[in-house]
Image (cartoon, helix red, strand yellow):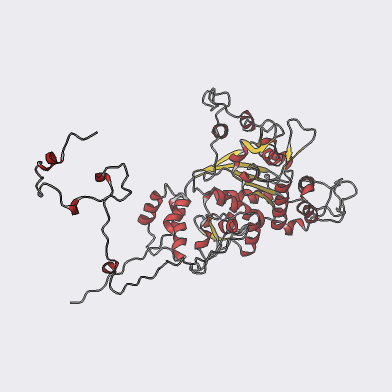
Length: 505
C-alpha cells in the first residue's frame, strides 16, 4: 500500500535551525548495546581519564609498599602460685629506714611494765619465725616501712600482759583460769595486731599457741570434707584444714612439744610409741591427712591432761596453758559454702573443726583444764553482715553492763527478722561454774600513746616535723580519736621542712 505522504510533500517542510539542536558533543553516548531499553539521560556519566604521571609526588616511587608487623615478645606467664605468693608476701624489714637507738624488746618483764605505756617495743628476732608459722602477720600491715617489726604498748596490751602473768603465776588465784574474749572495734583499731601481741606473749611464756588466721578459709568450700557416720544432724570432718593446723602448731611450738612425752593411750594410731613426744604425735597428722582429725583429738587430749594414764606416769610433765586465737569470727555464724547429699547448704556449726573451736567460748574452762586464753576477733575488712551475730554481741555487752536478760532494756531479735536461732543460742548466758565470755571493744589510742607512736615514726626517719602537743592533737583528731590504722597513714607520709634561704643585701 502506498504512503499518503509523497516525496514532494516532505521536501516542502522547513528544516530546523542548527542553533536549536544540541551539539553532537553534548549528546550523551550509549555505553551499552544500541538496543538497551534504558533512556539515554539515565546512563552513568563517563569518568574523566586522568594522567597518572601528574599525581605522583616528588621522588615518589610506584613500587608496592606494605607495613611490616612489629614482633612483640610475649612475657613469660607466671608460674602456678606465683601471683598468690606475691599477693601474700610479707616484708618485715626496711634497710632504708633508720635504726631506732635504745629501742627495747618485748619480754616477760616489759610486757607488764606500766612505765612503757605508749612506747614501741621491738619483737624478738628469734620469735619472728614462730609468728610467721602461725601467720600472725598480714600483708597490708605496715611492717615494711620500719627497720624492724615493733608493737606499741597500749592500755589493752598491758592488761593482757598482766592476765598472762597471773595465769602462769605459781601462787596466783587466777592460775589455771581460762579467759574467753571476743574482740570488736571499728576498722583500723588494731584487733589483728592485738592478736599478734597475744601470740608473742604466749611464746614468751612458753604456752602452746594454736591459731586460725582466717576463719573464712574453713567455710569457703575450698577444702575437702567427709561426713561422720551416725551423727544427727550430720557432722563433717575437714582433713586438709586439720592437717594444716597441725603443721602450723608443730612449726611454732616445736620447742615445747618436743619436750613433752605421750602420757595417754591412743588406740587406732599406728606408729606411736610410748616414748614418742607430742611433736611426733602431731607429725602423724600432717604426714597423712586421712588421720589428721584423730591425731588432733589425741593431741588435744594430751595438752589438756592433768595426770598420766595408768602405767605411763614415768615421763609425765605438767602441761602448759594454751592460747587459741581466731580472726574473722563472723564467717562461722552462717551457712558455709559446703553442701550435703541433698544439695542443701551446710551450716558452719555442723563442721566438726568449727564446732570444736566454737565450744571453747562456752566450755573453755571444762576443756582447757590447764588454763589459757581464748581470743576470737571480728573483722571489718572482710566481714559478712549477720543480724543474729549483731544481736548476740549486743546481748553480751548488755550482760557486762549489768542488764538482766529479763529486763525490758535487754536487746533481742526483732519479730520477723529471720535471725539464725543457732547463733542466738550460742550467745545465751552460760549456766554453772563456767565463766562467761567477755566482749572487748578496741578504740583509739590516747593522746599520750599517740605521741609515743608518732615519735617512733620520727625516730625511724619517716617524719621530719617537730612532734609537739599541738601537732599531736591535730593528728589525733584527724585520725578519728587515735585510731591506730589512720595514724599509720598519717605518719608514713614523708614531709620535708622547708629551710629558708638567707637573703643578702
